[in-house]
Image (tube, rainbow, N blue to C red; front, side, top):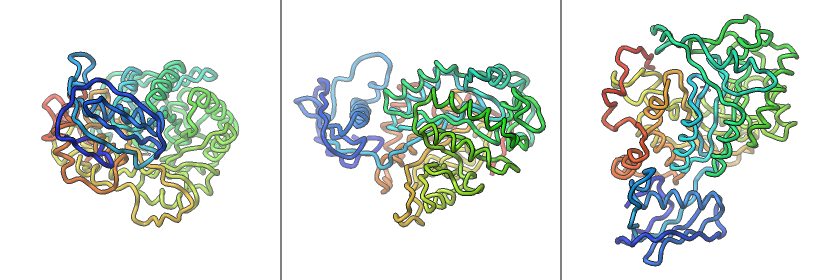
Length: 455
Ligand code: ACM
């Protein structure tokens, strides 16, 4: 019997017991950790905290077999006799979902919250705004969603050679929707961290309120880095202070994302002004590693290191907490193999094995840095993922490999892929996840003729 994620210690009793339910007691130990004992007397969970109980219950479900992941049907009857001692390696085990480039309906976000929980992941970073769409209902500025939440068209594939799809795309979450998502996640010990991206990736906001920008223009129908960033007027900072007030009201997370990436020509003062505002609101700003380039960061800022790990190392040396998400290892929109059958192949090849092989702690770190490495997150950008089916294909099974990386001890298990194939893919099948088969895409998962841009 194997598990995923892999526990710290697993003792197989070598036989099956009748499954008769479980009992939980709280005991001291590392955060999120637990001990699970199954025997003829039943299942005993010794959890270290409420998150630890949740993690133990996910392991219990794994022990009960793939059938336990079905929404209805025969209840599992047996469980292996075993003792498991387990706790997470990192406190931040995250996934970023880009719901801006392609809107993911609320029901699908809730399904992803559940899938994170199944994989013992505990942070959902929602990228709520970009050039191509604004997804957050802001009551003070209704045009952000009236105008900014939809676009006339989308490029179908890479901008260098693809044509337009010829149909509009849009959608947004009301504040009630978002509060529901936050609560559903909280019940699963998952923190939802919102991001409103400034000063780049802001064309949808500028389309709604042209006074925020310099050049005007509609909600963008293209992909890539957009030169049309926010202007440096004090009125723009005031506007965003009001937007972030509403954001902080809806999202109780300590950490609030302000983007900061890919903003050609912008001096960073707006990012600093909003970072200070987030701190005044009692929270901590969270930005992509470009924010290191525009002067010292506001105290308490957390940095997401995506252009490799160097930004993260620099930030930790300067006393900032860091989340690692380097694009060459954990960008799950990047192509999964060299094959031309990969649908809209973009980025560098990032196989399942590549994700599993990744070590989130860079060798350059000495352990003496004043900043902390909180953990890591996988990023799912959706320029080329226009439906939940496409997100499933990109995310799975690589997200299972990522989950094991951030949960388990750093030593790699040569049996990982076998374990995944034998035990975990049947669970994903039972859950109805449309993952990429290990042998390559199903015919209906291909997108022949839609151009990508492999690197
Ligand atoms: C990013 O990939 N632009 C953070």
